[in-house]
Amino acid sequence: MILITGATGFLGSELVYQLLENGARVRAIKREGSAIPKILQGKPVEWVTADILDHFALEAAFEGVRQVYHCAGMISFKSADRKRLHQVNAEGTANVVNLCLENNIGKLVHVSSVAAIGEGKPGQAVTEKDLLEYTGLQHGYSISKYEGEMEVWRGIAEGLTAVIVNPAVIIGRAAGDKGSGRIFETARRGTSFYTGGSIGLIAVADVARVMIALMNSDISGQRFILNAGTLSIKELFTQAAAIFGNRAPSILVRPWMLKLALVNRSVVHSLTKQHLYSTEKINEALPGIVFRPVSEVVNETCIELV
Image (cartoon, rainbow, N blue to C red; front, side, top):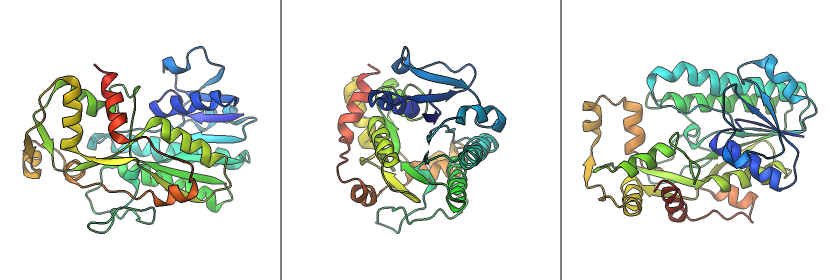
């Protein structure tokens, strides 16, 4: 039996779908009130209602499980959500790690983020060796995902077999209007503005495929950056505008403008930063994996919203 947390989310539902296609027996955790995604409706999934913050509610879900994929998490860049981010992304992960240890789970694949990795040297791509160093410019999401990773490393030190994936921004048809979907919804409505930063992107199906491949490998105690390519914010909005029939953005929003708009400095830093990521490590670990071209997936994501 395979257990997936966050199974009703964008990535989690795609992962469950692929596992079922591979003939796996899947138990999926969902919070009370969460709707089952269309992609999984009518599928042979054993649903368990629980919250990752409730250790005792989670216990029953781990019975008879041999593998765990931890996809549950919270995404927010609001300062007011820092406490909640810590609870979900750090404390929730601690609960999952502890239950994996208590139940002698065979392997855990944990979904982190490139936001939990440090910044590389100027002009160089970020690698898995770049550790996050607190500078005051990181937003609460980055810190909470880093703290979640620390819980997994703690579990590994205590004997847990585990792998961490650090995907860039995950996109795809079912992105909806949350997370990365907000980017495309903004583009659909039309905008004349863009920032000077860039963004790493990867298809949701590719992330799920890599996670399954890592689970079924002998790899443990490692983390892997997953990124199919990088686009500038202007390039991304321009490509999306063409599909939606909107004008391409033409006004560069500079950092001082964002600050005048009362955007907190960690978000300003993120929106104006050049994001470059190395995928050398995952390419060496899984040489058969080929990521779909970013432009192709951007088009697909936009067309779903037309």
